[in-house]
Every structure is written in structure tokens, then in C-alpha cells.
Image 1 (tube, each protein chain N blue to C red):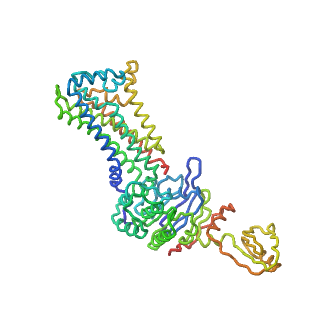
Image 2 (cartoon, rainbow over the protein chains, first blue to last red):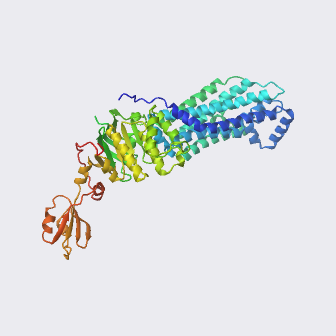
Image 3 (cartoon, rainbow over the protein chains, first blue to last red):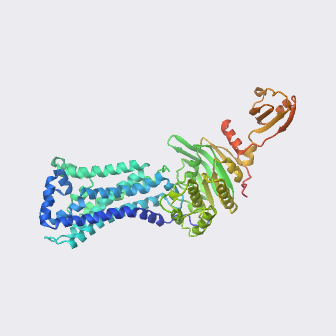
Length: 275
Length: 313
């Protein structure tokens, strides 16, 4: 009776999961970092830019839109560098982490049968959820910051014909981190709500993909412009981020993120897990 | 105060039944058997007891504290061995066990783990994925016992173990009970249950049909008579229609084995008419008693009895 019955925060679980995620996180981060340097290697040289733009002109217009649209023009080095932030491959990498982390940690442990072992120790379900949320959201945010560090490294590695405003990229990274974390939070909600891994992954991937394609199609086809506001990407790309901190959009994203995380937490705590 | 108290515990999964109105208690130092066929509700009871499922009704108390689902209440003091033990395959057994022990903040678990691993002849430095089924079960035993719990919830603790290791695990359970731990042992191995449990509960279709000392469970079922007739005597026709509660267990040339409930008087008087060589009264096992609960479809719940200490003590 002398031992406390209130569970302390399970730092060892956080650490155990962190070590399991680290190789995947590191791999994705490395690719993102190197991709910024590769993009800078292309766009810092005008001859390369002309070739690059010539190549872009060969692509279908919807793909050009996905890569940055009308902003991509010779001489606009800053806009060209942002290709590294919105390239579909980068989006795919974010999706892998955003969906893989919470579903692997919550539904994955349930399906493997190891969640039963975790919950047999003095740890609350809410603490388990918080551990998964911390690793998902911080992981997403740090990936975006690594991407920004890639841009910083690239700007120092190459000489550009115009000054590169790194504060713009920092704003993009912070806002992008919030957006990425919001998608991570949605995947967390799916992981907290579904008992089967394939279901949680399918719904989360479906939500991300539909959001992305609506954003691209709405930007590409003027008749569908009204659909822009129907996606979370609207809070990233259609803001005044080029000029100042998009405080309003960031607040909206933060509120959505918090709301989704809280709803997921309540669902996770209340439901009987299919152990 | 009982170490484990379950009162009117009921769990429904939507419209389908899990368990209904389960009530029993386990005292400190007692090994309590929890018996029932697959799907009877043993695992549901255990998961409610562990706070992994939210009961539809009723309550569970462990060491005096009410268990609230999802809160890890009292889990520092509970050792749990799940029925289907699955653990991370890649890390070494030591890594996973030490992480799970550390979740309870138990620093002394390392020494106990090492001692138990030596006793069970288990190499903790191999990835669990490389271990045989029996060795993985040993990891499960270590998980339950490594933090010296005051309450042990063991679901098939010896599944997949060889007879020697099975005995070691039963010894470990008995030692824990002698040291004051309350043990809930769910097992299909009824010989094992009757060897180490003082009392047992029998579960059928989600309801308790019996909670009593093992000896009483065995005695209150059928009794047996085995009769050898004299050489050359014809085996008489048994008037079963006149004797409700009597059945033939075995019939061989010259030998009749019957099971009966209540008094043996009419059978003995009937036997007096024939040349009998010898009569024995074979002891029925817990397995026989257990089978009777299911074959006869009885649904009488007997009151719990006072004989609480298990055979371990």
C-alpha cells in the first residue's frame, strides 16, 4: 500500500518508440535535406534554370501547378527554391511519416498484441496516446525544420544572382510544420478511432490525398477555384506568407490541430481496444 | 480485505454477451483457479480486472482500490501474463522486459529478472523473434513476475512449456503465493489447477456456475462405482430407467463402471442379487467434475466456501 498508484509519465515508452522511429525519421529527413540542396544546385545557375523551366514546360499544366505554377519563372530564385517545399515527392514523404507514425504506434501495437503488455503496466491510455501524439507532431515539425535547414545550407553552399530571403523560408517552414502536424493529427485521430491498421491507414491516406488533389485542381482549373477553401492547404499557400507572418491562418491551423488531437484523445480513452 | 474483489461484473459487446454478474474474491496468499471452455468469458473477466475493458456493470477492486478502465490503477502491484503472449520480435528479451519494468519505475526488477531467467534457463540476450514458443512463454513468465507483484493475473502460464519447465513455473507461482501474493490462474490444464489451486470458479457462457474449494467441486459431482463380477457371471442389464442420476461410464465383459448422484443404496441393493467379486470407488478428477458442469447443463451457483488457502500453502 505504500507504493503510489498514480502512474508517472512513461518516458521509457516515449524513448522506446522514439528509437524505433528514428531510422525512418532520419531517412526521410536526410532525403528532404538533400532535396533542398539539389533544388538549389539547379536553380542557382541561370542556364540550369532555363533548362529546368524548359523541362517544366513539357509537363502537363496540372503538374506545373503542383510544383508552384506561375511563380516558377526565370529570375525568381526564391519562388524556384520553394519547389523543394511543395514537390509531390516531398508531400509523399510527409505522408509516409504522418500516417505511418501514429497508426504504427497505436493501431499497430494493438494489432501486434503488444498494446496489451503496455497497458498491463502502470500507464494510462491517455499517456500512451500523448506519447504517440508527441512523436507524430514533433516528428512532423522537425522534418519541416530539417527541410528549412536544407535551404539554409543550400543558400550558403551556392551563390545566387539575387538575395534569398531566408525569413520567408522560415515562415514557410513554421506554417508548413503546422500544416504537416495537422495532417499528422488527423492520422492520429484515425489511429485512435479504428481497430484495424489497414482501415486507419486508408482513411488517413485518403484524407491527405483528397486534400492535396483538391488544392492542386482548384489552383489549376479556374472554374473550381471556389474549392480552394475546402482544403487545409488553403491555410498554407493562399495566405500572405510571402510578405508577413500569416498569424490568422496559423491560429486557424493550430486550433484545428488542437481540436483533432483532443477528439482523438477522447475517442482513444473511451473506446475498448480490440486487444 | 480481499486482494481482488469482483462484484456483479458484467460486460456486453454491443448485443453479444461477454460476462454476466460475475462475483468472487481472492485473498492474499491464495491461488484461485478460473476455469471455463473457450469463449466462456475468462479473458473478458481478466481484461476488465486489468482495466483494459470498460465493464457494462459492476466493479473490480484490487488491493482495496477500485479499478478504472484505462487508468493503469494499481498496475505497479499487478503481474500480468496474457493468454496470447506477443511481444516485439526485434529487440532482445532483456530490452523489452526492462522497458516494461521501467514503466512501473521498478529498479529492483533487474536482479529478479536475472535470477528468474537463470531458473527458467532463458537467454535474455537473444531477440524474442528468434526464440522458440516455449522460450517466449518463459519471457511472459518473467514479465509477470519480475517486479514482485502482490497480485498475479495469469492466463495459461504454462502453455507451450515442457513438463520440467512447467513444474518450475508452478513452483514459482506457489512461492509467490506463499510470500503473500493473490493469484488468479486461468488454465485449461485441470491437473495443474487441482495441483496448485485451493479454490476455483467455473464459468459457463459468461456466468459463474461454481465457486468452491477444489475438493468440494470434485466431491459434489458424481460418485463412481466400479464392479467386477465373479468369473463366468453374465453382466446384468442395468435398470437405468429406475435410477435417475445414474449413468454407465464403462461396460466391459465382467466389469461395470457406473456414475451416480446422491445415495448408492439402490445400486448396492441391486448388486446384491449378483455374484460380485469386488467393488471399488474410483476418485473422480477435477477434469471429470468440470466436464459434468457442461454435460449436465446445470446452472446452480453454489456459495463460496471458507477454505481459502490453496494447495501451495
